Length: 208
Image (tube, rainbow, N blue to C red):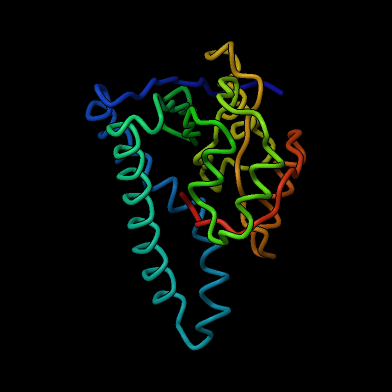
């Protein structure tokens, strides 16, 4: 398969965060378009009386808010030194149009899960499951989004995720969290297809 895209790689620190803001704004429509089908299905399930235009408008507004909240949390985590660095991989076509992206945060798996755990009763399970402290070879995929028209058979999502191994040679483990809902089966299937394995199940804050 011929690859008709390249990966643009950016490092994000608290000193450089502001310079990345215009890129984040350009990527917001991809974030919204990629998640719209999943969230729309859930919205219909809870509000079957809504018309399609109402659902699309409601979900689009919600996803923009979620994206902005995600970026605000990232900035706060960098400024407070909770995470030392983040990375952004953007797939672009030959016309420099963004097709998809992956956002990474350099943070041990245990710390990430503990910060997002909704059920305090499972904190001990996390401590036992991820017993190593001070792990420096792990990275968290905070977001992986590809335009719907480019999601099948082009290898964009896979390339964005695994680009981290070429740019951060010390990274040995890539981890992420996904919703276990039925509407998210396609996402789960993709991650399994590219080699991810289910390690831990729990209740976590969503889309963080």
